[in-house]
Image 1 (tube, rainbow, N blue to C red):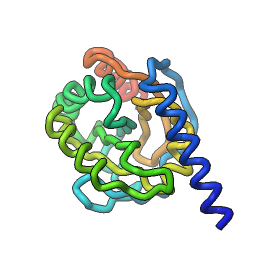
Image 2 (image 1 turned 180 degrees about the vertical axis):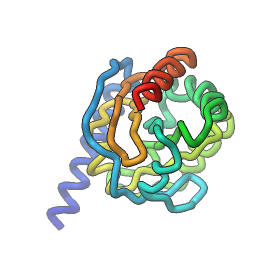
Image 3 (image 1 turned 45 degrees about the horizontal axis):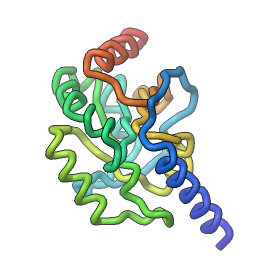
Image 4 (image 1 turned 45 degrees about the vertical axis):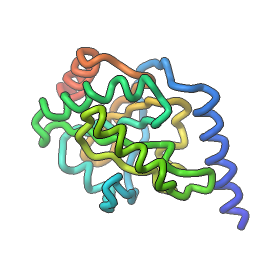
Length: 181
């Protein structure tokens, strides 16, 4: 019971921080940490785990919200970038942060809204719903959206970007991260 209360309090604080800060203006930083040992559900209902990261040398994990205009504005560019790179080198995965309620339960109406926005923006790449494990561990440091993590095939965080970017800026960051691999 206490663990569930702590989880609910942490999720509530994260949600409040996201709503109060709105969408992030952001800075870049190199980050340590890891996206490993997770299980999540994609917006299409399929289950995925950390092995999805092994499909590419570098994965861009773009954490976004359905309420966030900068998130939605960059998604068409991200859709184009996902198609432009060889998937064995680079892939994009979205994480729709506001599809879970304060108890960590997925809200189907939010998932439906996210699916509509994904289709409208042409962001035709995998999008995950935040599992409790992701919320408690890897996403606990996210205070604004969009926040983007670049990870290697083992889930090690290589780079973190807060805020939205234009396509050319993303391309430059992607190329730099790939060059380091």
